[in-house]
Amino acid sequence: MLQFERLATDPASHARRGRLTLRHGVVQTPIFMPVGTYGTVKGVLPQSLQQMGAEIILGNTFHLWLRPGLEVVQTFGGLHRFENWHAPILTDSGGFQVWSLGAMRKISEQGVQFASPVNGDKLFLSPEVSMQIQTVLDSDIAMQFDECTPYWQGEGATQGGSGHVTSEAEARASMALSLRWARRSKAEFERLQNPNALFGIVQGGMFEHLRLESLQALVELDLPGYAIGGVSVGEPKELMRQIMAHTPHRLPAHKPRYLMGVGTPEDLVQGVADGVDMFDCVMPTRNARNGTLFTRYGDLKIRNARHRHDPQPIDPSCSCSACAGPDGLSWEQGGRGGFSRAYLHHLERCGEMLAPMLASIHNLHYYLNLMREVRAALEGGVFAAWRLRFAADRSRGV
Image 1 (cartoon, helix red, strand yellow):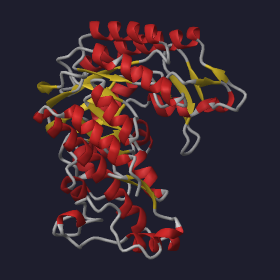
Image 2 (cartoon, rainbow, N blue to C red; image 1 turned 90 degrees about the vertical axis):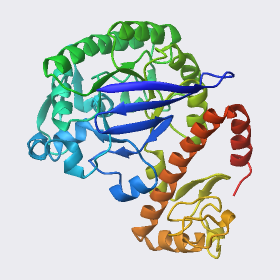
Image 3 (cartoon, rainbow, N blue to C red; image 1 turned 120 degrees about the horizontal axis):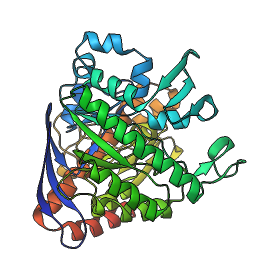
């Protein structure tokens, strides 16, 4: 079940405001989706996610398949009751995790053979198996099984290693395989009579004409929604932005568009302008665990010694429970609740688990509030002016 409505558009860009109705609830778009790899958003209670306005979260097909295993999730009737999250859930297909295994996996037309990173067991993941797993998880949005096209090929698959930049021929072969897997994913999804929605994933590496071929072939499958995959995989930022500008607005206007694994606040705002409706990224929680906090006025490194005596909250404009306290009033609104930078600096230096918990709450609230501001700007017809103010604020510095 999926219904997508466009509620407003921006005449100066491809940005749009929408509403997505799924089996477990309604999602306002553009939206950021917190990542819950193992059935939990690290360090954040479901109640806290609800309070900060999260409307949909992610689960990880690959990792949940390995642990706790399908028989456990099936006992609970799916992922929602198992993790006590009763709003929508999107699950990825496992393709990205398989790609990240590197030499531990062997790709064939049938699927991927690999050794479990948990216990070394030999496992096999295919489009059919991925659809079977996601059907047991009962996620509102399932993703087709695809091959994530890397930017760098070879040992380490990173610049500076012994690999090489993915060639056009390699990107074409990978894209074509993903298309064949998309057809198989759809066939198995329908055979299983899964009542949820299946999204296709546009691949093609950093080659625009391959992206267009992938897009056109996926559109012929008439899937409920589409994603742009294979970005933020080691390519330079300008190439990522090039694909962001090229692909989203060419997808069907009456269906939701999802940019996978991106990114910084600036990336999200640019993605909205390019026509994206849905985003996910581990950056808010991963950066929180490393002491980096996002604020309206730039990024803050809480471990820096200059914060040792600082009485300010993380972000004086923020109303999250870490910054504003129970009254919900930011410092700029006259509130004086919340935790100081000095306190979070102290927790970080002592290795206290409360530090990444509070930082995660703040960063996720920042991302979700950023999307609320984007939606309000689109509704009010002032998105262009809002973007200028956003950029000026972020460059001001904390």
